[in-house]
Image 1 (cartoon, rainbow, N blue to C red):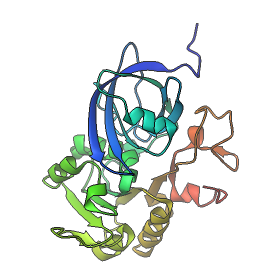
Image 2: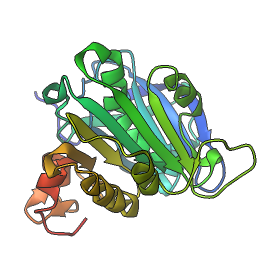
Image 3: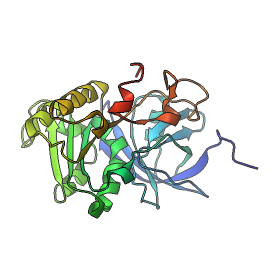
Length: 273
C-alpha cells in the first residue's frame, strides 16, 4: 500500500545548535530518519510535526549532496516551533516531504553565483550555497552578502568565518556596534556599495519581504535582468500538496509550483505574497 500523503516519517534529532538567543531565538537541528527517508533538491521544504502540537513547513537548509542528515534552521515564532525548540538530541520528530520545486542549479553551471540573505532568510538558500561550494569546479566565482539587525542575530556564525577563506563574504548589520569591522547598513544598500557584476551571474536572495523588494530593485539598477534573479516565497503552507489553498498566489500553489521563483516569473503573478 502506498504511503499516505499526510503520514510523516519518523526522524531522530542527532544535533542541536543554538544560533541566536532571545525573543527571536533560532536553533539548527540535524535529523536522521529512523527508517527509509527521502532525498531532496536545493530549495525544497519539509513539514515538521510534533505530536499534540501540530506541524509547520520549514526549508531544508542542508545540501542535496548531504546524505547523512537533513538540516533545519528554525526561528521560535509559534506553538509548533516553540515545541521543536524544546526538543533535545535523541527526540523524535515527524517529517514529511519533500515539497516544492528547486533552484535550477544544473542550469547555472559556469556562472558566477551571488547569494544574498537577511536574518533567518539565509537558511532557505544555504542548501544551494553549500551545494555550489561542494561542486566549486562547476561554477564561476561564489560570493555571499548577508546581514542582520545585530551581529548576535546572525545564523551560521562559525560557518561564515570559514567561508571567508573560500569565497567573498560581505557581512553587514543595521546599526553600528563596538568591535564590528564589516559593513554597517542594510543589505540592499551594501549591494549598491559593492556593485556585484551582472555579467554571467545569477543572484539568489531570501530574507524579509522588504529586504527582497529593495535587493531586487538595486540588482536591476546594477544591470541584472529578471531571469538572473531568484528568490523563495514564504507563503503559509498547511498541507504541502496543493489541496488546502492556504499558500496560493492566484492560480499558483507555493507548496507545489514554488517556493523558488525567478523574478521574471514572480513579477507576473498577483502581488499577494
